[in-house]
Image 1 (cartoon, rainbow, N blue to C red):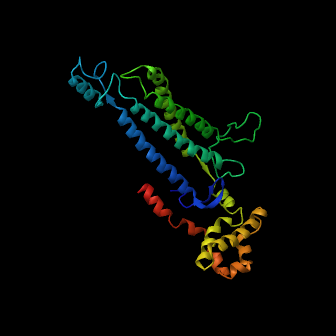
Image 2: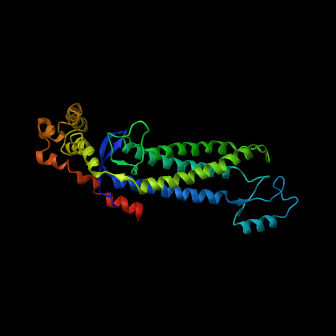
Image 3: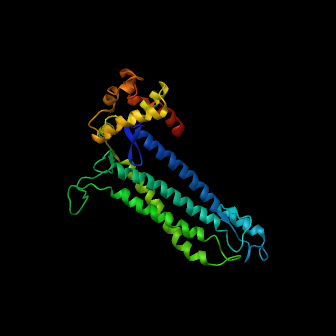
Length: 304
């Protein structure tokens, strides 16, 4: 909850969009991993079945009660119908779930990596005293842990494809899946376990810089409030096409000045804009707090 209302810039396509809070970024990650945990629990449950049904699954030489007894002792469900092996669609779903979890790991890792870029520097991995960022450049503080997580996520996702290919076995069984599973079983699960532990450490020690977030938020002369002005103009009777044109032509001047000009000042000096909105009405549309009015609602949805 520490950064629930810490203002930062939301980005779409890597470009400044509208204000958000850093707490919302973290809440989104929490909700995503909550879904991942539920998926993993479901995938484990789906794969935890027992089959002792004979050479082709007919129980010709073994009674189904044996299967039931073993399943109960091992805490497994009975496979309703099997061949010589448990159907590999179950395994494919399990490894696909690991791949989805890996994707969520990478999503958060990439966010941190971008936030740590020198020209952004809104958050960064913890850098311990005496740690080296580069063997050649002593000034470097590189996001090595989240870069490593990105690589691990790629490997975990790569194991999902052979698991999917294992589904299509010949008739009642061949062993094309067997050698594959000897690799991907331990490798995918161990790698995911390590990646989750590493990501936990990154988040626990994450360095967050609210002042830099505010500086970046203010860097482009108020452009982040353009949509509110656009809507206000339409509500004042200006057509949406004309309202967009009026706001955009002033916004482009701010872009071309590299943020040195103020969008609010330009709008106040634009006779077509002020014909519809007063200076006070324009100023009201540049209120940062407006964007955070529903943060409590979102947090209640996520955390209850």
